[in-house]
Image 1 (cartoon, one colour):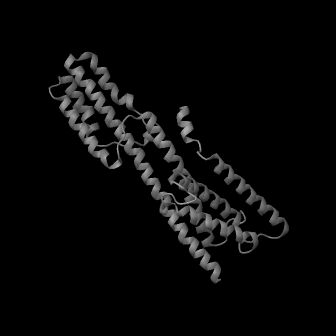
Image 2 (spheres, rainbow, N blue to C red):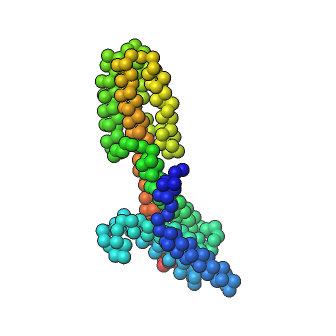
Image 3 (cartoon, rainbow, N blue to C red):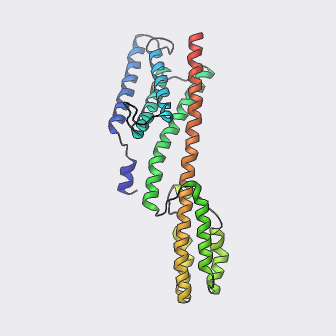
Length: 274
């Protein structure tokens, strides 16, 4: 991985990361000290305090979609995002302390643990993807397009390729019909693009490059044009896969988060009533 990519993947706010780690360690230390004096209970004392703190962290973190520009003390979208990430992570730590680092005893406890854990892990994974995928695209691709425009742009490249192949010799026409035309038929968002945005590109272009020395000058010009168009098409395919993953991740994070919020409300109401 290139140094510039590693730099972009590195946490932007080391102070917030350090503060979260210190607070988590202090909470764990408080749990150990409290259990030396009396049995731990999530329903009273420090156990209850940590439960309330965890709920507050999650609720504030979930306010991220409702953020307002220049809202103080979070002045911009980046501040809101950092607060969203680290408050969610701290809320998960507080949840574990609240439960006494023990497996839940009932269905509600299990539901809360699974929802909070899944939401937190999905959020951390999404934060990584939001940094890693655009960084990989910026370094490995020359073409950028919005998700909804990519199918139309792929169709445009096919039209231009069909125009470029008009009047070509038999060998180039045969290569087009057998191998290239199906590849230009529509988007092909391969999963391998998540590992390498240029995955398979040289293998895809090699038939054109191998043919170039054996055709007339006019067909060599056509081959050069096809290489440019095919490269553009492959980059659009890679963009589509990266953007689809980012869109899919959002659903995996938002819906469990909404379920977690509902479970928190039920949990608090159940505690107050019973």
